[in-house]
Structure formats: C-alpha cells, structure tokens
Image (cartoon, rainbow, N blue to C red):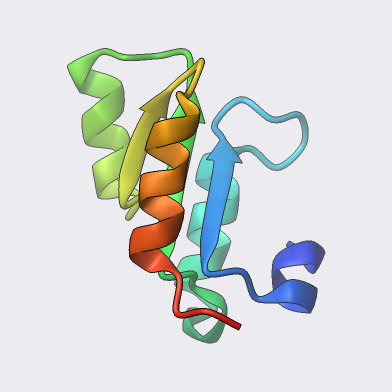
Amino acid sequence: MHLIEEHRPEVVLLDLAMPGLNGFDVAEELQHKPDLKPRCLAAVTVYSGEDMRRRTAVAVFDVHFVKLVASAQLLEIITANSVGR
C-alpha cells in the first residue's frame, strides 16, 4: 500500500496470492481510500475459472489477467488508462 500512496499509479496489477496482504486485501483497502484508487485495478492470478472471475469483479477489479500475462495485454490496459505525466 505504501507504494500506491507514494506513487499514485494509474494502473495497479495485484497478484491475488501474495504473502501477507493478498490482492483482495489491497483492493479492499483501496475501496476505503478512494483518493488512491487507480484508473485500472487488475487482478493477476493462475485461476481462470468463472468463480474466481466473479470474485474479482465483486472486489472491484477492472481486469482479470491469468498468468502468464501477454505483454500486448498489459500494454493495451496501460495505454487505455494512462493520462500521461
């Protein structure tokens, strides 16, 4: 969270299985801090099933990526959500 607070990125990729705070935990924290919410919050996971996709949608993730994420997919999301700096 401290990196998000410090850098205020436009796109945030969260691995759902991180040790400590997982991606769902971070997404929940961001819901309580709307000034930190990125333009795009992306879940990254090995789980591709519909149950997990529903969980990420409910948790306000904008995108659900299944590992390994293609660089073209990442570039598309970054370009679509970047206002430039």
